[in-house]
Image (cartoon, rainbow, N blue to C red; front, side, top):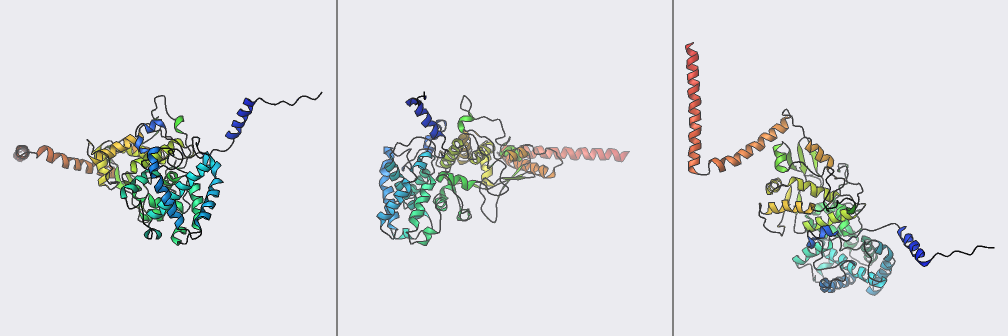
Length: 476
C-alpha cells in the first residue's frame, strides 16, 4: 500500500519560509543609530528640516519641507528637453524594479507599500540631484531659474547636516539610476561630465573643509552604499602608505560592548602621552603637506621622532558628520574603522586645551567656530579637546588602523645618545623656561629686583671664590 503524502503543518511552513528569506545575501547598509550613541547627543543623529528615506518619513516636524523637495524635483524635470511626463514614468518604472533591493538595504522593515516607497524615492532622489547640481560650480542652468533654497546660507549648512545622517539616507544605486535615466535627456554638457559622487563632494565641500583640488583629484570610481558611505570612502587612503589595518572587516557594535556598555581597551587605541608629553619626550609634530595634492587627515606618518599629520579643518558640521561616520562603522560588518581610529588617536593626543592649542599653532588643527559653548577650559581649544573625548564615549574600536604607528611612537628610544631627540627635548625645555620665567620672576618690580640682586650676589660670590683660590695657588 502506497504511503500517504505527508504535508507539514502551517506553522512549520512559516518557519521554512522565514529560513528561505535568511538565505538571501544581506545588503543592509542603512541602520538605526544605536541608542547608546543617541543618548549622548541626539541632535547629531536627527534631521533638522528634511527627511530622506523611510526612517523619518512620517515625522510631522519635517513635513513642512516636502513642498521644497517637490519644487526641486520640478526644477530638475524642467531641464529635460523631452516631455517631462514620459521621463518621469521612465524613472518610476526603473525605481520600481529596484524596490526589493531597496527594502533589503534598511535595518528595519519599511512601512510603505510599493507605490508609496517608489514615490518617496523619486521625490527624495530628484531633490538631492537638483540640490547637488545647483550647489556645484559647474551648473550653468542655475543662473536662469531662481534658486529658492541655496540663497539661504543657513539652510545650506542645515541641509549638509541632514544629508550626512546615517538614518537619513536612500541607497546610492537609486540616485545613480535616476541620474543615468535623466542625464541623457538634458542638453547641458556640465551635467553629463560629472558623476553623482563628485557632485556630492562638491555639495559637502564647505562642511568638510575640502578644496577643489582635493575633489578634482578624487577617483572617478568613487562610490558607496549611500551618501554617508561616499564620504567615508573618500577619506580612505588609497596609496601603499596606508595604515596596515585600513581595509580589514570588523564586527558590529553588539559584539564588542561589555555589560556596562563601555568600550573595551584590549589593544593599542592611541598614544600613551598627549601632545605635551610627547613633546617633552622628544617627539616632534609637523604638518604633512603634499605639494602635488592635498592630504586627507588620515594620512598620518611617523619617522625618526617626527609625527607628520595633515591638517584637520573643523567646521560647524564636522561633529555631526564624524559622529555619523563612527555610527556607520559601528553598525556595519564590512566597513573599516578608519574614522573611529582617528578620533581615538586625536583623543589620546588632546588631553587639555593646551594640547589643542599646540596643534593649532602647528597648522595641524584648523577651525571655524564650532558652534558650541566658549568652554571653561581654554575657550575654543578646550571645546576641541572635549569634542574628541565625547565622540569616543560608548564607542567600540576594533583593530585600530593606527596601532603600528602608535606602538612605534610609544616605544620611541629613550637613549640620550639620540641627538635628534636630545635637541627636541632641549628646545621644549627652553620654551617652557621662556614662558615660566617672565610670569614667575618678573611679574612685579619687587620680584624682578630680588632676582637681579640674587644673581649679582651669586656672581660676586663666584668672583670672590675665584680670586681667593687663584691667590692661594700663586703663593705656593
